[in-house]
Amino acid sequence: MNVHETGVLDASNINFHNPSELAQRLYFFPLCTGHYYCTERYLVQRQQYDSYLFLYVKRGSGFATVGHKRVKLAQGSLALVDCYAPHTYGTGTGWEILWLHYDGVLAKEYFRLISQGKNAVCCTSANPYGTQQHLEKIYRMYHEENKASEPLINQHIVGMLTELLTHAPTSREMDAENICSSLCAYITEHMDQPLSLEQMARQASLSPYYFSRLFKEETGYTPHQYLVMVRINAAKYYLKSTNLSIKQITQRCGFSSQSNFCAVFRRFTGETPGVYRDDDSEALST
Image (cartoon, rainbow, N blue to C red; front, side):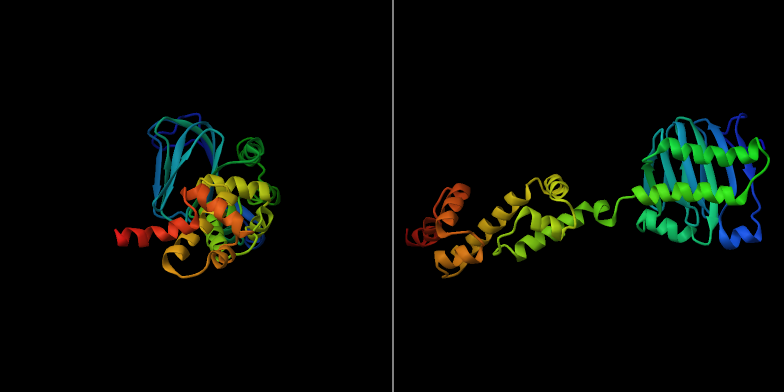
């Protein structure tokens, strides 16, 4: 079916589907699907359209906005949008897109798992060619073959959702800042213990290599560097604010020995713990 929308070129097509009662009870089902060639004037703004949207960018670029979040869509990007919420998408330069509005009894739950609670997901699919093939096969059922099979369409939609769900980052990976914040607090609470990289990585449920790289990217320090800094800062506090002995501070801050504590402290501050502690008394007496 030809399209009569602003910014949509004549070569574009759209097809609509009226789902059967069986499909509405059992399947993911399409509402409409299309292959659009658009100019820079193409823009869709809706308060609500009861469905979820797959939008794949074959050529060009654009954007999608849900709520206050705007994401860029480059060539090869796949946007999954909750159209039950107010949404906008379009292009300022022109693009070629394959798209599918769909729904189903499990559509909301799948979207929640993939999006990790966000209103829109924008990603470069781990298998962009596979995503394109799924959408093109659904589109061809209507545009070329004139025989839309609801079970087969369901299979294609499940394939795309499974691809996103399988390759979607876990909640920890999606929120690296929270991981590192939690680990920073854990290090502070357990600095008196002989924390190893492996132990900290287990606490984050990550491999030592990935945890070390992630922590460095987020904090600017390796886990070991951060641990030493926490211990030194705690030692400074104890030296200036308590009457604890050097031996007691060594134990409370997790240093392996008193000599190790003194050597590390001097390397970081340029002073021995004793000199650092005495600085205040000397200043007061002058």
